[in-house]
Length: 242
Ligand code: UDP
Image (cartoon, rainbow, N blue to C red; front, side, top):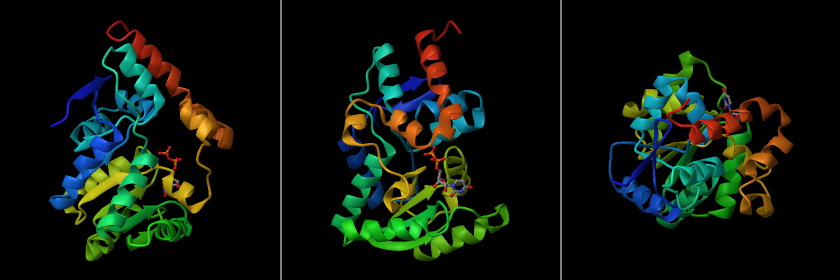
Protein backbone atom coordinates (compact mmCIF):
# COMPACT_ATOMS: atom_id res chain seq x y z
CA UNK A 1 0.00 0.00 0.00
CA UNK A 2 1.37 3.41 -0.92
CA UNK A 3 0.81 6.59 1.03
CA UNK A 4 -2.08 8.72 -0.25
CA UNK A 5 -2.71 12.44 -0.27
CA UNK A 6 -6.30 13.62 0.11
CA UNK A 7 -6.84 16.40 -2.43
CA UNK A 8 -10.33 17.87 -1.89
CA UNK A 9 -11.61 14.36 -1.13
CA UNK A 10 -9.76 12.52 -3.92
CA UNK A 11 -7.17 10.16 -2.48
CA UNK A 12 -4.13 10.21 -4.73
CA UNK A 13 -1.23 7.77 -4.47
CA UNK A 14 2.07 9.46 -3.70
CA UNK A 15 3.98 7.69 -6.44
CA UNK A 16 6.49 8.66 -9.10
CA UNK A 17 6.38 7.02 -12.52
CA UNK A 18 8.86 4.25 -11.64
CA UNK A 19 6.93 3.36 -8.48
CA UNK A 20 3.65 3.31 -10.39
CA UNK A 21 5.29 0.96 -12.89
CA UNK A 22 6.46 -1.42 -10.14
CA UNK A 23 2.87 -1.63 -8.90
CA UNK A 24 1.48 -2.14 -12.42
CA UNK A 25 4.00 -4.92 -13.15
CA UNK A 26 2.58 -6.74 -10.12
CA UNK A 27 -0.95 -6.19 -11.43
CA UNK A 28 0.06 -7.95 -14.66
CA UNK A 29 1.05 -11.00 -12.62
CA UNK A 30 -2.30 -11.36 -10.89
CA UNK A 31 -6.06 -10.99 -11.09
CA UNK A 32 -8.76 -9.62 -10.90
CA UNK A 33 -8.75 -6.62 -13.21
CA UNK A 34 -7.09 -3.54 -11.69
CA UNK A 35 -8.24 -0.01 -12.48
CA UNK A 36 -5.89 2.96 -12.83
CA UNK A 37 -7.09 6.55 -12.90
CA UNK A 38 -5.04 9.61 -13.72
CA UNK A 39 -6.99 12.53 -12.27
CA UNK A 40 -6.06 16.12 -13.00
CA UNK A 41 -7.55 19.20 -11.29
CA UNK A 42 -10.43 19.30 -13.83
CA UNK A 43 -11.53 15.79 -12.88
CA UNK A 44 -11.12 16.42 -9.18
CA UNK A 45 -13.30 19.53 -9.47
CA UNK A 46 -15.92 17.49 -11.32
CA UNK A 47 -15.73 14.87 -8.54
CA UNK A 48 -16.15 17.52 -5.82
CA UNK A 49 -19.57 18.21 -7.36
CA UNK A 50 -20.35 14.57 -8.09
CA UNK A 51 -19.97 12.11 -5.18
CA UNK A 52 -20.42 9.13 -7.49
CA UNK A 53 -17.38 10.18 -9.53
CA UNK A 54 -15.44 10.77 -6.29
CA UNK A 55 -16.31 7.19 -5.22
CA UNK A 56 -15.07 5.88 -8.57
CA UNK A 57 -11.73 7.65 -8.11
CA UNK A 58 -11.41 6.47 -4.53
CA UNK A 59 -12.24 2.88 -5.42
CA UNK A 60 -9.63 2.65 -8.17
CA UNK A 61 -6.60 0.49 -7.44
CA UNK A 62 -4.03 3.10 -8.45
CA UNK A 63 -4.62 6.86 -8.62
CA UNK A 64 -1.70 8.87 -10.00
CA UNK A 65 -1.25 12.66 -9.83
CA UNK A 66 -1.72 13.82 -13.42
CA UNK A 67 -1.00 17.47 -13.99
CA UNK A 68 1.13 20.26 -12.63
CA UNK A 69 -1.92 21.67 -10.78
CA UNK A 70 -1.81 18.66 -8.47
CA UNK A 71 1.89 19.09 -7.83
CA UNK A 72 1.32 22.75 -6.87
CA UNK A 73 -1.64 21.75 -4.70
CA UNK A 74 0.46 19.16 -2.88
CA UNK A 75 3.17 21.77 -2.24
CA UNK A 76 0.60 24.17 -0.80
CA UNK A 77 -0.61 21.30 1.40
CA UNK A 78 3.02 20.76 2.46
CA UNK A 79 2.96 17.13 1.37
CA UNK A 80 4.48 17.46 -2.09
CA UNK A 81 4.19 14.84 -4.79
CA UNK A 82 7.72 14.33 -6.09
CA UNK A 83 6.57 14.63 -9.68
CA UNK A 84 3.49 14.51 -11.80
CA UNK A 85 2.69 11.22 -13.50
CA UNK A 86 0.88 12.12 -16.69
CA UNK A 87 -1.47 9.66 -18.34
CA UNK A 88 0.48 9.82 -21.59
CA UNK A 89 3.83 9.07 -19.88
CA UNK A 90 2.28 6.23 -17.91
CA UNK A 91 0.75 4.79 -21.10
CA UNK A 92 4.13 4.93 -22.83
CA UNK A 93 5.83 3.19 -19.88
CA UNK A 94 3.20 0.43 -19.78
CA UNK A 95 3.43 -0.15 -23.54
CA UNK A 96 7.19 -0.40 -23.23
CA UNK A 97 6.78 -2.95 -20.42
CA UNK A 98 4.31 -4.98 -22.52
CA UNK A 99 6.76 -4.88 -25.41
CA UNK A 100 9.36 -6.31 -23.06
CA UNK A 101 7.04 -9.10 -21.86
CA UNK A 102 5.28 -9.69 -25.20
CA UNK A 103 1.96 -8.66 -23.62
CA UNK A 104 -1.19 -7.43 -25.31
CA UNK A 105 -3.19 -4.22 -25.42
CA UNK A 106 -6.79 -3.52 -26.52
CA UNK A 107 -7.58 0.04 -27.61
CA UNK A 108 -11.17 1.12 -27.06
CA UNK A 109 -12.29 4.63 -27.90
CA UNK A 110 -11.68 7.73 -30.01
CA UNK A 111 -13.15 8.40 -33.45
CA UNK A 112 -13.46 5.55 -35.97
CA UNK A 113 -10.07 4.81 -37.54
CA UNK A 114 -8.03 6.49 -34.80
CA UNK A 115 -7.50 3.47 -32.55
CA UNK A 116 -6.32 1.42 -35.58
CA UNK A 117 -3.83 4.14 -36.50
CA UNK A 118 -2.67 4.45 -32.90
CA UNK A 119 -2.19 0.66 -32.83
CA UNK A 120 -0.04 0.80 -35.99
CA UNK A 121 2.14 3.50 -34.48
CA UNK A 122 2.44 1.56 -31.25
CA UNK A 123 3.60 -1.62 -32.96
CA UNK A 124 5.97 0.47 -35.10
CA UNK A 125 7.62 1.65 -31.90
CA UNK A 126 7.12 -1.56 -29.89
CA UNK A 127 7.37 -4.53 -32.27
CA UNK A 128 6.75 -7.21 -29.63
CA UNK A 129 3.61 -5.55 -28.32
CA UNK A 130 0.52 -7.57 -29.27
CA UNK A 131 -2.56 -5.65 -30.40
CA UNK A 132 -5.47 -7.68 -29.01
CA UNK A 133 -8.05 -5.48 -30.75
CA UNK A 134 -9.38 -1.99 -31.39
CA UNK A 135 -12.87 -0.47 -31.35
CA UNK A 136 -14.01 3.14 -31.69
CA UNK A 137 -15.64 5.04 -28.86
CA UNK A 138 -18.93 6.13 -30.40
CA UNK A 139 -21.22 3.30 -29.34
CA UNK A 140 -24.64 3.30 -27.70
CA UNK A 141 -25.51 2.05 -24.21
CA UNK A 142 -27.15 -1.00 -25.85
CA UNK A 143 -23.86 -1.94 -27.52
CA UNK A 144 -21.78 -1.77 -24.35
CA UNK A 145 -22.15 -5.39 -23.25
CA UNK A 146 -21.36 -6.66 -26.73
CA UNK A 147 -18.15 -4.60 -26.64
CA UNK A 148 -17.24 -6.08 -23.25
CA UNK A 149 -17.78 -9.56 -24.73
CA UNK A 150 -15.50 -8.71 -27.66
CA UNK A 151 -12.79 -7.56 -25.27
CA UNK A 152 -13.24 -10.61 -23.04
CA UNK A 153 -13.02 -12.95 -26.01
CA UNK A 154 -9.38 -11.87 -26.47
CA UNK A 155 -8.62 -11.22 -22.75
CA UNK A 156 -5.96 -8.54 -23.23
CA UNK A 157 -3.36 -7.82 -20.57
CA UNK A 158 -4.04 -4.11 -20.82
CA UNK A 159 -7.20 -2.27 -21.82
CA UNK A 160 -6.99 1.43 -22.75
CA UNK A 161 -10.30 3.27 -22.73
CA UNK A 162 -10.28 6.60 -24.55
CA UNK A 163 -13.76 8.08 -24.08
CA UNK A 164 -12.70 11.30 -22.32
CA UNK A 165 -13.18 12.02 -18.65
CA UNK A 166 -15.33 11.28 -16.73
CA UNK A 167 -17.14 9.11 -19.28
CA UNK A 168 -14.28 6.61 -19.47
CA UNK A 169 -13.97 6.31 -15.67
CA UNK A 170 -17.72 5.65 -15.35
CA UNK A 171 -17.59 3.07 -18.14
CA UNK A 172 -14.60 1.27 -16.64
CA UNK A 173 -16.09 1.24 -13.15
CA UNK A 174 -19.40 -0.13 -14.42
CA UNK A 175 -17.78 -3.09 -16.17
CA UNK A 176 -14.60 -3.63 -14.15
CA UNK A 177 -15.82 -6.77 -12.38
CA UNK A 178 -16.86 -8.36 -15.69
CA UNK A 179 -13.64 -7.52 -17.54
CA UNK A 180 -11.13 -10.19 -18.48
CA UNK A 181 -8.22 -7.77 -18.70
CA UNK A 182 -5.47 -7.53 -16.11
CA UNK A 183 -5.24 -3.75 -16.04
CA UNK A 184 -7.60 -1.08 -17.35
CA UNK A 185 -6.96 2.65 -17.64
CA UNK A 186 -8.74 5.70 -19.03
CA UNK A 187 -6.41 7.48 -21.44
CA UNK A 188 -8.47 10.51 -22.57
CA UNK A 189 -7.07 11.97 -25.77
CA UNK A 190 -3.88 9.84 -25.77
CA UNK A 191 -4.94 7.67 -28.73
CA UNK A 192 -5.41 10.86 -30.76
CA UNK A 193 -1.83 11.78 -29.87
CA UNK A 194 -0.54 8.30 -30.79
CA UNK A 195 -2.44 8.41 -34.08
CA UNK A 196 -0.89 11.80 -34.88
CA UNK A 197 -4.26 13.61 -34.77
CA UNK A 198 -3.24 15.74 -31.82
CA UNK A 199 0.30 16.84 -31.10
CA UNK A 200 1.84 16.25 -27.73
CA UNK A 201 3.19 19.38 -26.07
CA UNK A 202 6.82 20.08 -27.08
CA UNK A 203 9.56 19.57 -24.48
CA UNK A 204 9.59 23.25 -23.48
CA UNK A 205 5.94 23.14 -22.39
CA UNK A 206 6.43 19.80 -20.63
CA UNK A 207 9.51 20.99 -18.78
CA UNK A 208 7.71 23.98 -17.33
CA UNK A 209 4.43 22.15 -16.61
CA UNK A 210 2.63 24.10 -19.33
CA UNK A 211 0.99 21.19 -21.18
CA UNK A 212 -2.38 22.71 -20.29
CA UNK A 213 -1.40 25.93 -22.13
CA UNK A 214 -0.30 24.02 -25.23
CA UNK A 215 -3.53 22.03 -25.15
CA UNK A 216 -5.55 25.25 -24.88
CA UNK A 217 -3.72 26.69 -27.92
CA UNK A 218 -4.45 23.50 -29.90
CA UNK A 219 -8.06 23.15 -28.72
CA UNK A 220 -9.32 26.61 -27.66
CA UNK A 221 -12.81 25.15 -27.16
CA UNK A 222 -11.48 23.56 -23.96
CA UNK A 223 -11.24 26.92 -22.19
CA UNK A 224 -14.51 26.34 -20.32
CA UNK A 225 -13.26 23.07 -18.89
CA UNK A 226 -9.94 24.63 -17.98
CA UNK A 227 -11.68 27.37 -16.01
CA UNK A 228 -11.89 24.70 -13.30
CA UNK A 229 -8.14 25.03 -12.68
CA UNK A 230 -8.08 28.45 -10.92
CA UNK A 231 -11.13 27.43 -8.87
CA UNK A 232 -9.28 24.25 -7.89
CA UNK A 233 -6.25 26.26 -6.75
CA UNK A 234 -8.44 28.65 -4.74
CA UNK A 235 -10.13 25.71 -3.03
CA UNK A 236 -6.74 24.28 -2.12
CA UNK A 237 -5.44 27.60 -0.78
CA UNK A 238 -8.59 28.24 1.26
CA UNK A 239 -9.35 24.60 2.06
CA UNK A 240 -11.54 24.22 5.10
CA UNK A 241 -12.51 27.89 4.80
CA UNK A 242 -14.61 27.77 1.59
N1 UDP B 1 -14.48 10.05 -27.26
C1 UDP B 1 -15.07 8.85 -27.59
N2 UDP B 1 -16.40 8.67 -27.38
C2 UDP B 1 -17.17 9.62 -26.83
C3 UDP B 1 -16.55 10.87 -26.45
C4 UDP B 1 -15.20 11.03 -26.68
O1 UDP B 1 -14.40 7.94 -28.08
O2 UDP B 1 -18.36 9.40 -26.65
C5 UDP B 1 -13.05 10.20 -27.49
C6 UDP B 1 -12.65 11.38 -28.34
O3 UDP B 1 -12.74 11.02 -29.72
C7 UDP B 1 -11.24 11.62 -27.87
C8 UDP B 1 -11.28 11.19 -26.40
O4 UDP B 1 -12.44 10.42 -26.25
O5 UDP B 1 -10.36 10.75 -28.55
C9 UDP B 1 -11.50 12.31 -25.41
O6 UDP B 1 -10.63 13.22 -25.49
P1 UDP B 1 -10.62 14.45 -24.51
O7 UDP B 1 -9.47 15.24 -24.94
O8 UDP B 1 -11.95 15.13 -24.42
O9 UDP B 1 -10.38 13.73 -23.11
P2 UDP B 1 -9.55 14.15 -21.87
O10 UDP B 1 -8.12 13.96 -22.24
O11 UDP B 1 -9.90 15.57 -21.57
O12 UDP B 1 -10.06 13.20 -20.84
